[in-house]
Image (spheres, rainbow, N blue to C red):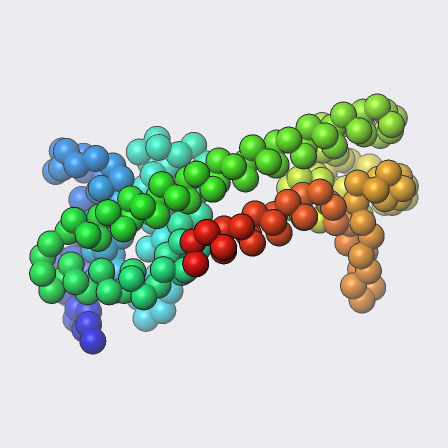
Length: 221
């Protein structure tokens, strides 16, 4: 069992030290990915919060990569890899604390970045292909309702609602309902009623994300 620092003064000193390590590049010339792995380990070991340290630590990973210009958007979802390899993750956290040897921990985190990056790139490519298909289909068969704002709305989430169309497209509720009915007729979205609400599911996107999640599970679990 690992007992993290307990006193306010100790935690404050350690967090101050970590904050300087994160933001002062003159303290270290380590590669940014290696430094990210160290930052994550140190944050989890300080364990400054009663709850939510794991989630916060994983968010810090992504924000640090954005800060270092390795990502332009926070789209690298390391949490899934860490959660699916949780036993090894905790084992290596403790091993590094006990031994002072960092290589195994750093290699684990680099492996997480590599595998997650490959999967994310494939997902982004797949979404772009589906998005282009929808653009071509709507532009050719429903030219009167086509707009980039409409496409963006359909791909913001795997589903949309009349309220989302009204807000994003700046149209009336009646017009939004008519647009969505036409998309249903074209079999680009599927109407799913849940209680009193209507959800319009992006069929291709939803199926693609389901398949991507299943494939990821088969490969990495």
